[in-house]
Image 1 (cartoon, rainbow, N blue to C red):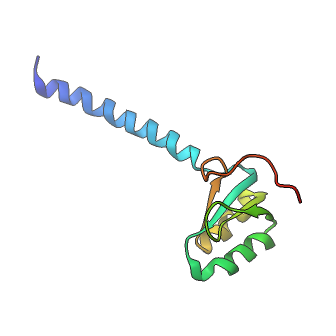
Image 2: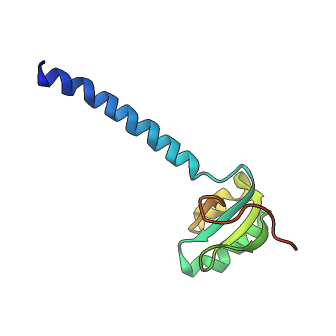
Length: 106
């Protein structure tokens, strides 16, 4: 069997595998369209201003998040995404961020 033929067939299959598995991994990191998500500030200097903007955009604080300065919010992702990006806040689904599902008593 010719080695060059084998490598020409293997490379596209490997790239397809990487593309599909990368897409699946990326989709697991997207917060829900509406519901509980974790807001993690990546820029400490903008933490309070950024979180205030998310709340002004309609997010409701559910409880403290799993990391220092993070919050579990209930919100519409599309309504707060631009402010989150602008203020250096990472939005993650609660399952990925290590939060228990369910709502805290208020």
